[in-house]
Image (cartoon, rainbow, N blue to C red; front, side, top):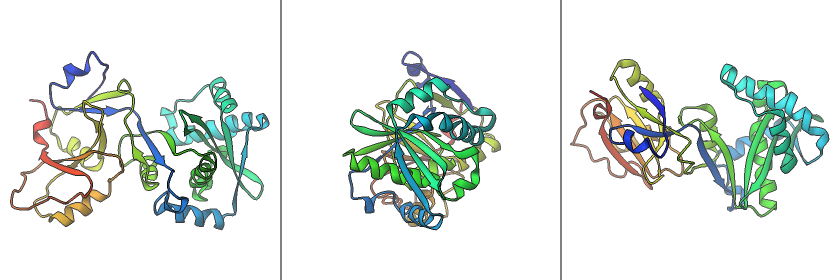
Length: 293
C-alpha cells in the first residue's frame, strides 16, 4: 500500500487512478437536539448503570486551581497510555489556553477526581476538546468514567441550548476501539478539512494486504466531500441479502452516504442484495480492480 499526503494541487493527479481519499483523523458529532432518553443509543443504559454502580458524580467548573492538575496528572498520562510511542501532546501553554476558554468537567468517585474533560462552544455548537484519566489508570475506564464524561457534558450542553456536540478526531478505521465507542453513541461522521487527508493506493494484491483490508473497514471521502464506507470481504457467494446486512452491521455508522463493498473473489449475480442496507445505498464491486499493475 502507498499512503501519501495530498493537497488541492496533488489530489487531482492521484485521483486519476483507483484509490481512496482518507482522513488522517475522522470527525464525528452527535445531534443532541432530541430528548435525552433518545440519545447515545443503547450505550446510554450501560453508562447510567456504571455511574450508579460506581457512584460517579460530576462537577462543572472553570476554577483555575484544577488546570495544572488536569494537565500533569490526567491529560498527559492518558494520552501516553492510549497512544504509547506514537503519542503527540499539546503543549502546556496550548492546554492552558483551551482550559481558559472552556469548561472543565470533573468525574469523581468517593470525592476523588478520576477523570476530566474540557468542552467549549464553537459556532453555536458544543465541542469536546480534551480528555484525561487520573494517572492514565485504565481501571478507571472500566468504571465507566469516559462514558460518564460524555453523559454529563451532553446534559450540560443541552441546558445551555446547544443542538450538537463535536467529538473531535478519531481514527478512520471502523475497527478502532475509540471510533467504535463513538459509533455506539450514535455519532455521525461529518465532512472534514480536505487538506487533512491522505491518499491510499493499493499496490500489491498480497494475502497480508487482503487480511488487513478485510479486518479494517474505513471511511473515505468523495470529490464533493461526502463520507463513504469501504468494506472488504473475501467472498459473498454464500450470503443472502439478510445475511449480508447482518455482516455489514458490525461496522455500520451514521452519516455515511454509501457503502462500497469490495469483493476479492468473483461476484455472484444470482442473489438480489437490494435492501441490504436500508437508508443507505450499497455498491458492490471487485477489489482486484483497485490494485496497480
